[in-house]
Image (tube, rainbow, N blue to C red):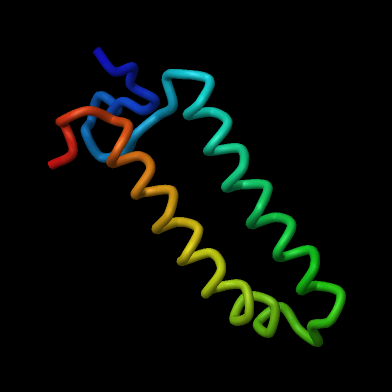
Length: 78
C-alpha cells in the first residue's frame, strides 16, 4: 500500500500535507518562490515589475506542486 503525502481538507477544496514528504515538498515550493522574489527584488524598479517577472516562475512551480499532489494524494483527486 502506498503512503499518501497529501489529503483533502474537510470542505474538499484544498489539500494538506499529512506526511513529512508532503511538508518537505510544500516547504520547498514556498522557499523557491520566496527566493525568486528576493532575487528579482534586487533588480526591479517597482513592485509591479517584481510581480510580473515572478509570475511565470510562480505558475510553473505551482503547476509542478499540483502534479505532485495529484500523484501522491490517492484516488480522491476529482
